[in-house]
Image (cartoon, rainbow, N blue to C red; front, side, top):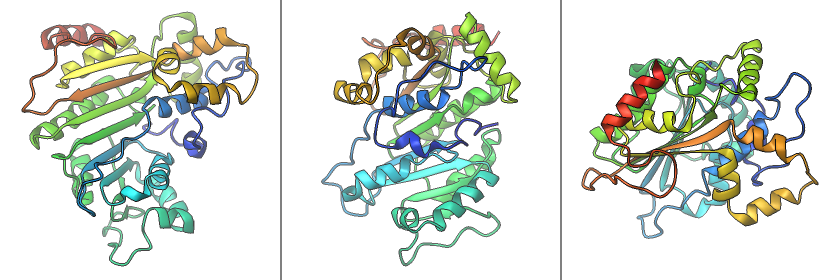
Length: 336
């Protein structure tokens, strides 16, 4: 199910704090009870959005964000609130199953503050597309129905939004692809790359999901989620950071990195954000926190400009600079 983890109370994920608290000791039999807290780290691990160029012509779309399996995530509203002075420079597209879209749409349209942030109260905002209940189309916010297993339908959803992949585009996926069969989820990663390539654009794909299923913690995590009816269908095929990097390179991305959340938290987050989080409450269960962080990762794929030579070396991440041949072989091995 594309939105198993995103379909919870994710309003807290983007509350403005990197974490509202460090994970507590899991309850008996529930080593993944802190998925939501980890997801907050994943959201912050993506970094503070870079504002569009101030010299951009007012009203001109210069950037594009596509959130795949967005669920009830509130990142758009956080972006709009913090960067209102850059209104009109970005297009934000959220995609999920139609039943999720209808529920989220009802919440947005019935909440004046959210409707205002989405600019749905502005004159000239087009009504929902005929035959697509629940979809929202504002000046720069779009909430559309789509099934990630159906790429043709996903193309049509992008068309309804007026998506322009010649623009720098950021694809986001938070605990979504991992619940799909690996062949289908890799198709989505390849689809995103191809959309930008065909338009001669640049893009990044940022995914947050589980990793390392084969140690005792990973086995228990897999079994726990299986028991809840939401098995991690893609984890066995891409169990390591190296396998994740190889997957993106094999799907056509120019460069790729993957870090577990321990690295994200200790090395990539702004130290002031980390200090702020650690002051919220006393915490001394670092062994379990590190164990949890070792089993979630952020993977980034980058598609360079077609006019720029692909970078073949790098200082950070895992597998940076691997050849496409090496990536293909590693990808095939991981799938096997």
